[in-house]
Length: 447
Ligand code: GLC
Image (cartoon, rainbow, N blue to C red; front, side):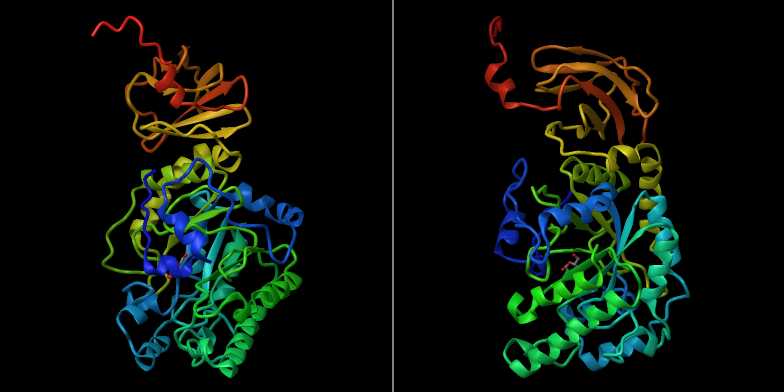
């Protein structure tokens, strides 16, 4: 797997508990233990109904946009640089993105083969990108003079994308945001404020598909009154999906900056460089191939990939992100079906390929093309036929005890990113590489 395991203090803070923190540092098991125990404020049956579109969608765009986008030094600048609140909030007087910047985000998402978006309505900095009656620290009452969440909502919907709202519970600006931990009157005020903002978000825009909470510092789920809050959310938005970061398990688990398959619904969120919010000097961009491989890894484990862009203060998307997503989009133009229709795949082992599965068909996604012969070890099924995907051009194959070889292939990779061989098997594809080590015949070995 090419994604990095990156356990930062932020990562740990944002996890909903110790179990999540541990799972992100231990080696990835075949399919991880359930992390979510089912929705706290709904039922598994209702979750299956509500999540159908999400499982098929597989690929979404995360958007981190706020006052930090003007600074261009990462969305944690306010805390990491110790910027005083009075100084930081001056940014609200200059944050004024060009009108309808979100339309370009939504177009790019669609072009990349993404099916939904999740945008920061309020990040840890406390600034609300949306219209609210509860604070003046919001886009319509500051330089922007308009509701940026409304623009985003309209943009996503007009591209046919589903809409998610990210909402940070932690708040570095609100006077009660830290003292609520040990001052009951402050907690009461801050929880009322929080529930009030969430209510506005769930009321003022029409149908909402995802509520994506983040960092529940400094309160416990009881302190946040998370169950009550999510019951309210479901009452206002009966079909909504809610993540696990209000410290109660709901519809899906959120591994961050790494990919790990869970038995319960999961979505891996990831940056394209090392920053969520715009950071001008961050040049650690992942390649289009890495992103494509990550998407395939998510699809293999029946999970989703939420890939981030961090627009600049004027709302424009960094060129590098456009370039990556345009390339991934070209690959998706040919291969989207394999991603959207992927079921859990038990075949995983190769040093040059990855795998997805639909029914009895195994798709070998070759990212390091070895030449005319591609071999897979330990497949426990009989191969019935093989083709190049999507051309359908037949591929010869030879199968023996522990190996299947696909022969007579082009010398160079048909696709610049990841080339696919479709392999029809006589049952659900499975792989046992340990049996190769244990049982491969050693007779006749002369030296
Ligand atoms: C972490 C970071 C935050 C980012 C989020 C995305 O919690 O604190 O900046 O929004 O991850 O998952």
